Each structure stands twice: as structure tokens, then as C-alpha cells.
Image (cartoon, rainbow, N blue to C red; front, side, top):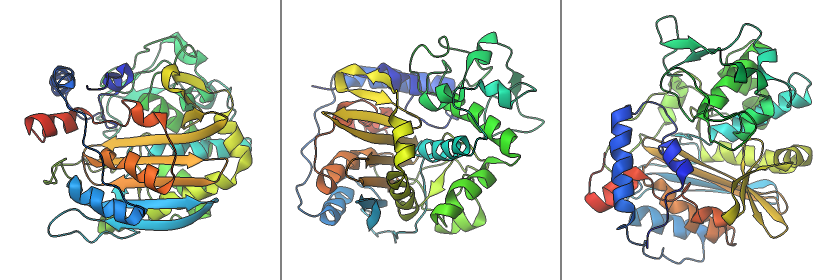
Length: 393
């Protein structure tokens, strides 16, 4: 029997970028809901004692043209594995670049929390403290400039929005507005996943530091952590290492070139670089404590909550951090275990890439994880259309 569709996933439309036309999104969601009842339970994944062997089997089984996985052990980058399931195989290396999609958010949150440590931001301060001239909201964050459609946000509820709420997705903003910005709920009352919230916080960070996001991230994160092949916008250097995105069946796919930095989804990175980030995060006990302090409920049935920049899974007395990524042509997943200092990040260049997440985590870091029962990391509308109707968009 198919798993129920999580209403938060419908709200997110399974895309991190706001570029899909509204009509197309409605059609795809209708198809997903119609197909959910007939989608069969997936076959068991191949068993393997070694994560590297598991990765090879999985990419071949699921037609994933490129996948790279970094494993962290005891707060140190332990291993980077790569594989290609295409014929002919792609040359996938530890420094091959992927779009990380929403894995952008935890890295941006790390920079925000570093600015909090430096006294340049305050978690419970109204975000408008850092935007004294107000907030001009771009309908499409990738099309900013004098000619781009935008609105001055005048809703008085914006005055109640804090930095903490934006990191925690409780500001009441939608994932993407695709028009004038509006509130879905009163700030601070409930969890609603919001890329718009991260763009608002990005503007505050840029105003405080006096630099565009890509420069802020270089100074606060990439240079200190040795992330030499990461950027929040497409550059010639990134393009040289970038692997093109594909459909769930391995066919070429039209993807969006992210030439403007967007905190919510535009990170280009490698498995090795993101592994360095996870290892550094797991070594920072004070930051980990702040991330997981006072989380908000997301799915009480699965013990899923949200902290500052990360999803949080409670398993007994243990806490795990997680985030998934979903851009057209790319899927990603990251999980971190603060108590043991272990973690894993997976980057793929396929719409079907999230199928690899659970078996890879199970092979590298054996444990049961309720997050894999949630609709956040199960097959999205594109995967269902491709597998059931053979419509691979």
C-alpha cells in the first residue's frame, strides 16, 4: 500500500526552485494524488556489507548517472565514494560538483549562527532590525534587478518575524510565493517549510555584512573549512566540474543554471566539500546544542521536529540531524549524528536520486530512521510519473 502524501510535501511541490509554472505544478500534483493509491511498494534494495559496493549496485539498479557519498566517522571525513550507473559510465570524482538544492539551507544556517556568535545577528531580534528600509521581495529570486517583478512587503506581520523563526521555518511564509509575498499563518505559530523565509534572511545577512551572499559564504564557511569547490552561484570554475542533471530514467534533463546566489537552494558543491562541512559541524558542540535547542514539531507520529537550519529526528535519547535536497535534475540527502560524531552526505545528478538515501545510510550507519518513513524523502511526483506512467519530464 502506498504511503500517505504528507501535506507539507504538497505545499513544497517537491521543488526547491520556484521556476515550474503554476499550471504545471497543479497538473503534476493531481497526477501524484491519483497515482498514490496504485503505486506499489518498492522492491527490497540489494544487500551488501560494504557501502561502496552498495553504492555501485544502487546506481546501476536505479539508473543514477552520477552519485557521490561522503562518510564521516568520529567527527572526521572518513571516506568519499563515487559511482555511475550510466552506460557509458560518467567519470565521477570526489571533487565532481552537483547542485545541492536544499542542502544549501544548513550551510547557510551555519553561517548565520556564526554571525550570531560574533554578535552581528541576534536570534530573537526582528529581521527588520537588519532591514531598516523594509523588504523588497523578488517574485523570482533568480531574476533580480531593476526589471524583475517585485513587491514591497507591507504586511504588519513581517514586524514579528525573527531570525530564529526564519531558520526554523515558523515565520508563516510559503515555500515560494511566485508573486506578491503573503503569509500562510501567524509568525511563530506553526512549522511551514519556506524557501521565501531563507531568502528574507539572506537579505538581512547581506545588509549586515555589506556583501552579497556568495562572498559572505566564502568568508564565513568555505575558506575556513577548506571547501575549495563550493559556491552559491555558477562560476566558470564550478562549471568545469559540474555534472549535468538527468531525469529519473537517466535521460538528459534541462536544468536551471543558478547564476544568482540564493540561500535556499543554489549551493554548488562536492561530496568531499560537504563532508568537510559536516565534520566541522559535528566538532562544534556549542553550535550543535544551539541547533537542537527548543525545536518545533513537524510530524509528531514520526518524532520529527525542526531546529535551527536542520530537521531533527528523535530516536530514544538520541538526536539526529537531517535535510534533503530536490532541484530539477538533482537529489541530495545529509544526516548527522551529534552523539557519535558520524554522518553521511549523498549527492546525485538524477531526479530519482533519493531512492539511494535510505539504503546508503543503513549500510554506512546502521540504525532505524523514521525520517525515511516520511514523505519528505520518498518518491516525489516526478519519480511516480516516471515509474508508473513512464512520463519522465
